[in-house]
Length: 235
Image (cartoon, rainbow, N blue to C red; front, side):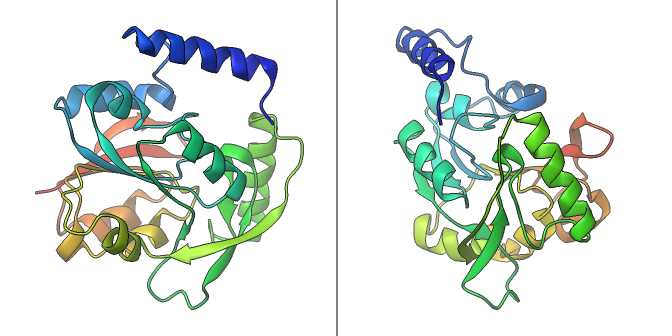
């Protein structure tokens, strides 16, 4: 639930944006949005952001939409976060779904709620890794309690075929808390390869193997020790 401080910060941000002030409109971690603006310095691009959360907190695409005229698609599995995302980003298409590989057999998948670090039952290597990630998420983001919820499971290619058929994707931002390999496995790179992919990962070798045929070696935008933010650019 939003606090009075949250409402005041949102009012300050929106008031500033109305007069062209960008100071409060850089929400991404580790200056990722500032780096993207320097690299993708053109207007009216099209983005896909998976792991969109509430549409603002730690968003890599918020600034591009607000100040550079970009439009796009936001994908968020947690129902309460997806609802907030729709309110925060009315100019974007918002889809509630968790990204899975083509061989996933069920229509839904269980998610563990931990705010910005919510993750699926298939994330990371094992149950112990998921437990540690959940505990970290609850502690770091001040989440008072966790829960599990079943959400629609879809491949990224299936979503794009419905929501962005034939669109050139200038940027895919993928922050899916340990499910990045599975999410990318569900993207048909022969037909739908984005021009740029920004991905938070703990599995650079696996990601590079998946993308290597279509993308140049990545640029490291941030190295956090346990994870990296990598930018892959299509050949």
